[in-house]
Image: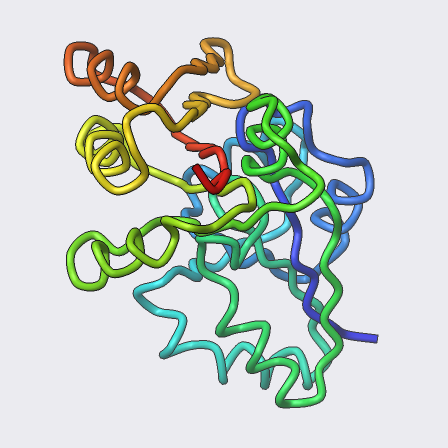
Amino acid sequence: MSKLYVVPTPVGNLGDITFRAIEVLKNVDVILAEDTRKTGILLKHYGISTRMLSHHKFNEHQYSEAICKRILAGESMALVSDAGTPSVSDPGFLLVRTCVDNGIAVECLPGATALIPALVMSAFPSDRFVFEGFLPVKKGRQTRMKELQVETRTMVFYESPHRLAKTLAEFAQYFGSDRKVAVCREISKIYEETRRASLGELATYYAQHQAKGEIVLVLEGFSGK
């Protein structure tokens, strides 16, 4: 039966992909890729010749209905993002919802994501946590940080390297400079690094050292003090 497969791809090391993901990517009719150039590197590495179509945040509203029509007509498709699991801080949600609304089967494979390794490596409680993804850049940013001030669960955020120092300084202001945080950088890549300290300490460190690569912030929950 034709369906949409949501396929996680490695966040770093190309060896992190599952056997099943490779099988799906080889056997579907079309791979919907956030960036065909980046996905092409992965496909070449595993000898996958399936044709690709570009599907990203700038065209998903335009093409989701057309993709659904093709699946209903008998094609099977796999949706991938540049790294990790589609729709988790990446394009994908709209297409999945459109497929479900049209009665199309959707199957999401388990696999790579940056947030879980970062959560575990932080050494903060991981039995209960909240994933915030990217905070708003401007409108609503301060409001959201105020709302999270008394969140008792461990909090996980994504951040870009050029905003890291500013975000840590803001966190120190809203959550207190003594609150513990882990900055996880380049997960599953050659220069993978995790720094654990207080918000004040890491805000000072990254104000003096420019971060590079993909960043995950894991923040200690509010202890009531």
